[in-house]
Length: 425
Image 1 (cartoon, rainbow, N blue to C red):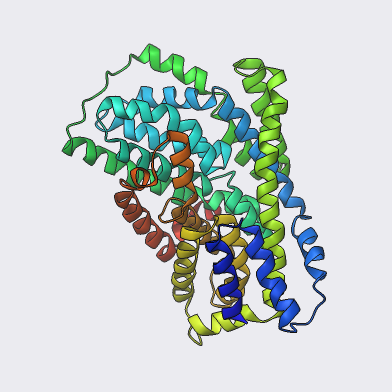
Image 2 (image 1 turned 45 degrees about the horizontal axis):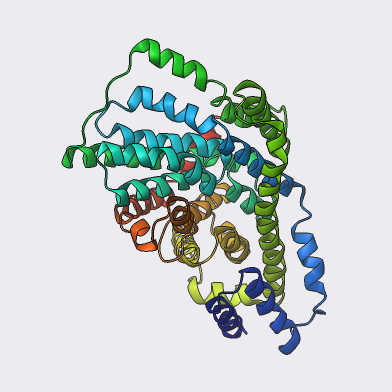
């Protein structure tokens, strides 16, 4: 059954069909032709069940908030603020890009929104400063992956949906350490790159100019404070935080910055609705897929094949990382999280892995795979946004992939990187 399932899905993907088709067709064939047990109509029930969770309400709200800010001036305010303090340093433009992607990721929770909002203005600045286009694009798409780790990460929300009992708020906090570590690696690399290629220094702004830009950035910087502070202050739940973020984005962009007119909101909402529908179709299909393969005991067959009889926590984490890394190189990260998490979750917990640490490792691999050839989703986003060929986009990615792999190893081996903030609070 396992090889039939894999063969059907690979064949349908090779035909170029949308991901939901293989997700539904594969398990449906198991139900129809392999006498797995339940009536095939159970898949419809499971698809509905997959999108009925209260926690999923946060997904469209965070997407809507991100779209509002992408259409407005939030990203530009953040870029100007960060550039005022680090832009004049060696590699300052690249450091500004990495820092802005990290900050905007803590506002939007979306890697693709970050590529658009930060990538468009910063690519031009990097090119004028003397960076190769391939290096500039690689920096943008890999820095944007931090958005999948730090709050309000949609990847963390999807993991919490699958891993029943994992707190979304705790996952948000746990992703901060790895996200900051990625930024530090990229900042050091930016300094070394600029030194080797003799990238000229930018002019250092005055303190009065820095003060002015800081004041302008205060309200955009309020997003992560509101989300994290509100959740851990007991003011609202993560789902309610998503609603607050939409309200805050509207107030900021419509009434304070006046970068968006009220008549534009329906078009922005429509765009958010299209993205949300794609996400929810994948979540519904993934739920049906996971239920059928669990009923057919395929996860047990797979874990018996790849895991030793009495695995250590480190062994399980390494195997989980490999499966998720390879999977996200070919398939959308949301789909991979939905399919593979139920397979490895119980063995990981039984081996003594902390469920929050497991979530960070899984989402980290999803972020890494999102920008890794051959089919990382951010590669195609960047190709469309910058009107560049696939080869042009991936040409500068190897150094960043190496750095991300190093950070991934550190996160796997040292759970303190993920959990130290939770221990503090």
